[in-house]
Length: 268
Length: 258
Image (cartoon, rainbow over all chains, first blue to last red; front, side):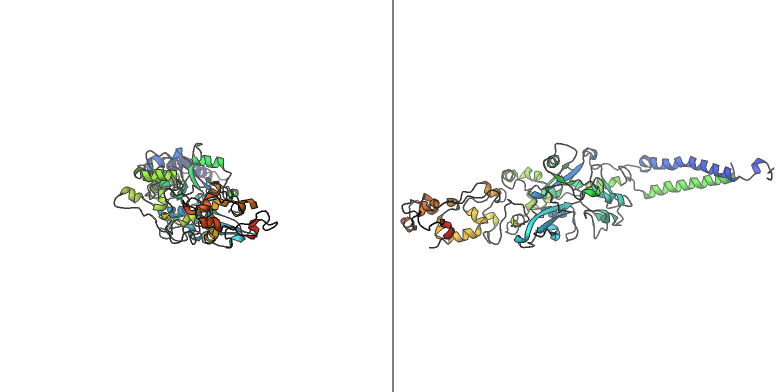
């Protein structure tokens, strides 16, 4: 092997030294990167924007809804209230909440319909003698504890608040509609003029002020119950305790927070 | 330090600076405040305008109506179900007045008969139930009560009621022959009215020496007996007439032949 007899300073860096030094430098640089991520919150954000309201503490709440199928009369007042409260376009394709009619005939064939969400009522479908059983099922976003729509959002525009409500950030949504595809309950829709994904907010602007969601306020028979899941002394806790509770599509492990009582096995 | 290393370090530093700079510009201020989302979005969603003022707010001014409603059958029906979203009226009580649906089209949204509705929920057929009469003429929407028997029976048993008014039994109340438990008005399928079970029941009027009950002799609240009524009642020998058949197996009590 040829001996390199030049002084050490003039000797070119051999491969081993180069690799070692590069790795060392990278290790030294990494904390800066990590630091960048950590200090971003307090320093790089500048002035933080305040909470929704001084009195409201989202960490002290965890919301859910109960729906009693035996009480729903299919009047569509919840759909009307929701469209009014949340400025939902008044056409037959966009709903935060809607009412479905299940009709099961003598041959056990299931027909499900929801003419205009049920907002104008339900015209008769088949002769009454052919009907074996029939009922209404109000539907809305289930505000899943394990929401697939939030998982798939590529930009973090849909999220779960600390009080358990799944919301869409209208200003940040890029309108890719991936969440609409991901929702197994069909609860999301695409706003025709804003071009962003939209959904039920549990009327977040109302519940943070201590009011009930518009659909619950408008339900004339008390078929909808809204409240805290984790506090024992609430109407919802009583509802879940007194009724046999089912959720929609439990096998998907989405952990819905809309609880149905007296739900027929045919409901999907 | 070898030149290459210092150059690399410089390049690295520039890269890190560009990255931090890009994050500063591109990532919204409050992103990551509570999670992988813009914290400020929660505030802007919470700040949306409220349209339904809620019935507690209504009760603040309309105390009388509120108390009446709280005690009636519409106690669970919030004001804005019928009167519409009224936060504008709350902001300007004199300028903006809430609408009140007074026509027949509104009440059937809930009360029109629909087989999908739960059993026992009060339902009518708007075609036959007092046609063309506004609902509020008979029912107070703030505290609705079903009209008392017998007119109440006709609301559901319209066909029978229409036959009965054209028959000789016009002045008999439904309750003359049927025992109607209060609960029948609430859960009509579960609690059914009673029916007469033997010939002796018809014999109370139609036996040769029977003295008909007062409500038959003094129909429609009359104070003087109409002699013709008692005289015109067909009399038969209850024990032998019709052989082994019960009265209503040959005669239809809601429309007995003349």
